[in-house]
Image (cartoon, rainbow, N blue to C red):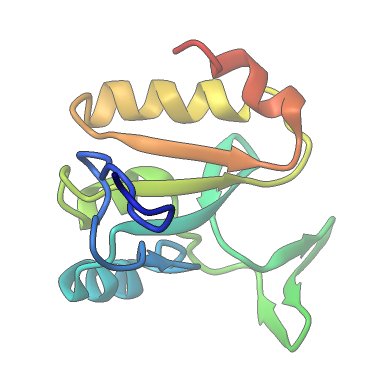
Length: 141
């Protein structure tokens, strides 16, 4: 008889240690490669649909003002912005990504899935978000 603390391990998850998720680890290319080398189980990235691109960033836009902000930072918004295909190219296809959908754009999840299918069809991802309308279109994919 097994105790309540024992569980049958999932074949893709660690059985004898905590699951290691690199929060914000996929929002910058050098950080993604660093946490991948350290052996994170999942690399989390925030995905925004902005100006027809799938941008990866934790900072938010200020609408038409070319600045990006977060609680403690203010950044110029006119430089290069990291996008999903660059994260795919920067990490191994075996590396699992946890993509956190941001904003209200309801076609975000289908755009992500289509990008993955075109660029790296063997890549496995996990999508999450707080807006069901964004996740519903790909619930059965």
